[in-house]
Amino acid sequence: METIFDGDSDAQRSATPLPILLLALAVGCGSTSADLYRGAPDQGADTDTYTDGDAGTGTNPSTDPGIDPGTDPGTDPGTDPIDPNAGANCSLVWSSGFEQGFPGEWLNWDDGSYSVSGTMPSGRVSAWTIVDDASGAPIYSGDHSYKGWIVSSAGASHRAYPSLHTDVPTPLINTFMVYLDADYDQMSSTDWIHFGTWGNADGQGGGEWALHTMSVRDRQLEFAHTTPGGGEYIGPSPEPDFPVGRWVRFTVYVHYQGTDGFVQVWQDGVPMLRAQVSELGGNPGTRVTRAHWGMYASSGTSQGIQYNDDIRIWTLDAPLTDLETEPDCYAGP
Ligand SMILES: [Ca+2]
Image (cartoon, rainbow, N blue to C red; front, side):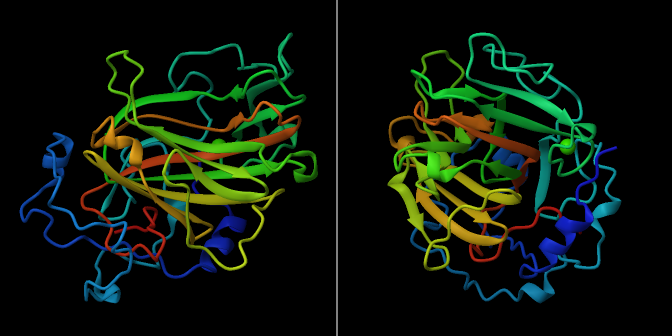
C-alpha cells in the first residue's frame, strides 16, 4: 500500500507556506474541463503568465473552499487512479511510486538500461533499477523507488530511465521527489544531471516536438531548451547549490498555449525557475505527450545516483493565478 507522505515529509511540508491553489477567473467564461480535455485551442484567452507572475486577482485565499489544512493526506489509500483527496482544482491523471514493477504504468520500452537485478548490465556505465526498502536505499513512500546510477563517463549522454507516453491537457502540475547522491567536485562546470523532461511529440513519428528539461549543472538547478535558455531564476539569493543526500520535492507547472508556453518549478515549496517554452513556436500544441524523469546526464558525468519516487501528473481546470505559492494538489477539498 502506497502512502503519500511519511512523517518526515509531513514535517517538511508543514514548514512551507499554507498551500494555496486559486482558480483562475473566467478563462473564456464558461470554459470547462471538458473543453480542455478536447484540446480546444485557448490562445488569446489567457493572460500572459510569463509577464504577469504575481498574484493579485483580489481573491482571498483564506476563503477558498478548496483549502483545508486539516485534511490528513496520509489517509489517502493512494491506489485509486483518480485520487479522491485531490484538491478541488487538481485531478490526478497518472502516477508512479515504482510499486508496480516495470513496465507497470510506464511505456513498455527498454533500451537496455533497465536492470532487474540492480547490477550494471554488461557493456554499460549507466543503468536504472527499482529498489526496495530492504536494500537500504532511500524510499520516499511505499516500499520501492527508482534508482538510476552512473559508474563512468561515456561517449554519449547517459540515458537510464523509463519513459512515459501519454496525452494530458495543460495546464498541468507534475509533482515528484528526487534524491540526488552525486559528488559535485567530480563534475565539470558544464556537466549536468537531468531531473525531468516534458514535451508534446505529436505521435506521428516525425520526431518533431517541443521539449524542455530541468537539470542540475554547476551545482545549481536550471532549465534547458527554454527562453531564457537556463530559465529565469526567481529563487532566494544567493542561489543555493542543489541539495544532495536528501529528498527534494519538485512541483512543476506546465502550460502550453499553442505556439507559446510557460513552465515554473517550486523546490520544496520555493519558486526557483520560470521560463517560456519557446520550442512550441515551431511545434505548437496544448498537451503534454512525452515525459521522463531520472538519470539522463552529460557524457562527461562519471558518477552519481539519483532516486525518484511519487511522480504524479495532475490536470488543472484553469491556469494558476498565484505563481508565488506552491500549488498543492495533495490538499483535500
Ligand atoms: Ca514508492
